[in-house]
Image 1 (cartoon, rainbow, N blue to C red):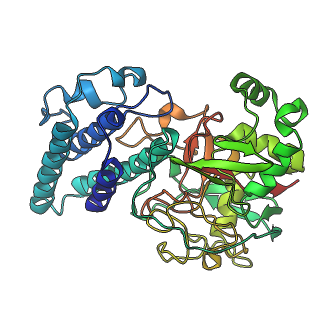
Image 2: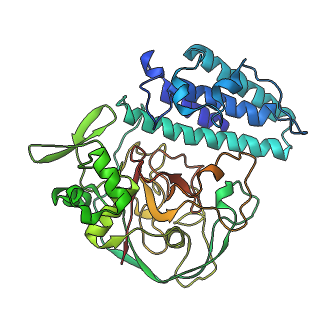
Length: 416
């Protein structure tokens, strides 16, 4: 896991020029040079520096805490710090990995080290996804070595889902999960109808072409305030020319693909489309019920929509597969038991719910992961084409503020 994450990280920064290592000062991205150093700091802190008595040893890099501790280093200051250059930062990452490898070799049976090594690898996978959308935000070339080649088309209609008693959240079975997934608890899900596919570019373009961004009736008060303040008239990266919608994909512009899911829309935009289309966003419980349960088999809950097998290319569009969104009708082998397609991969899906702790929440050692964000972020489910396969499962909860549209997010709807 550590090796795979590091290989991906290094590929994402390979070829950056001097100026691109910092990039412009934006609230929605980190300087890649800082982000790379933070990955080394995080792995060193949790796998090497923490002592059994709770104290922390010194870093391999002088002043590392003052440079890279994301809980204490203000975001806006990260461009102004005396950061080591790219070569020194890469050496720091390599030195940390070598020390972690040595510790794993001598303490392979240490459950604490095993936990923190997993945490470090998954943390790096999350940052690799963030670096991918940073490259999109900054119009850098897309990651190398990716191809599309997956055919699909549309996937219309709704699935009828029976609902019933349900255990929402992760089961305590010894597998690694994050604290916001803990633990499963009883909820009751009423019968509902969910779209078999995410909303497509073509479907969302109908709303845009009908003037949806200019009609306040489709937006709630915070959403209209966001739209007005932003001056938004279409999804991010869309541009109309000679009657055709174009979209910027990394550093290139392309004709909007009708059957691919709409992406780079925020929660406000998703909710406005739903009002216009007389639909609604699913709740977290509905989304997880549709992904994890099977008709006529109450009490059975699967880790993935298709069953127990880990994701692979014919099943889900995650990192290492297509390298971008594919048509919503593709990858039928990954359907849930209810006949819903691409619940894992392709595009993150906004849900109706605010990000809140489950009953009895206890924060994990990495205290800054979940707890600071409860109450002002919305939950997304399902992963996207840049999500590492080892990261995602039916119980995984992603979370962003409702105004964020730089991330690889779209949405799926339910009938009213």
